[in-house]
Length: 388
Image 1 (cartoon, rainbow, N blue to C red):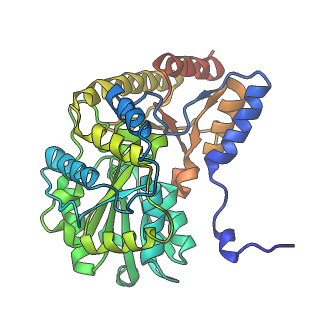
Image 2 (cartoon, helix red, strand yellow):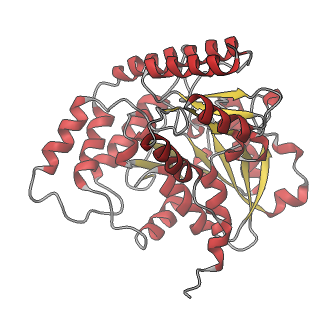
């Protein structure tokens, strides 16, 4: 019998892969399932972006290997995006590294920087790849509790000195997945100062920075003076431009960190597809006013979910950003029990909070990435199940 590597015991099949199998079986059996679990945008990118992809793909010479640094035009487009949105100046050649999705960059960064028994501070609840990448590299996670009473912000000053002295990396993610918590520039300033004091690498995942509501504007950690000395930030077109399947993202910030990530990438991939790179340039360079209209659709769905939860008897915080609602579950259920029963009884699929860590217990994450009428139908189904 062929024996797998011991490290494979450190990770399991991702929750959504297993969930997809169950939903497929239910669908085959004739069950209509409304998926409010995975954060995959249901709306397409702008027409100009799709046309740019098709036009580039039609060129016979555009199908070969590409540079691991992407194209100069794409790096410049990301630099321009950061200056327009955040007032942050980036050197396109040293401080911008295109990625094949931010998940790839997040996982690989751990392999480039974490050694056996290195300590990494990561949010709980939080995006599971921060954890999986760390343990696969041999590191140890120390959880940073994200609690509602602290607006889902970690309190660094409460960590024991011996933990901080051994720590190497801090992961942050705002607007936050799954809690939808947001951070201020003052908070980022405090974190940057903390990381400079303790020689920590700050990794900020800003995947949802362009999906905001009620006139809220999400800051970049790189707006903090001196942040580039200790920080990199991941961004992606997956959520911001409805391009999740295109796998087009970026790491920006500290040039030395990005160069090491580039070094690793030269051994793990062969660059991206040029038509996707060129379409990404188009996505970043066209008039961005459509984003506000798209966010209005998400905001309308958010309001439907919040009202529906209220009618069920559940009170969830109203998100200022992201594509989720972080909802408490009824007292009589655990997160997994509630999500399982909701799927089985009403055909509404949500993500149990424990997928994101122990402190996700008592919550479910509801995604806003289904057509508005289906979101409304999902809330009616839950009402029919729980109230009527």
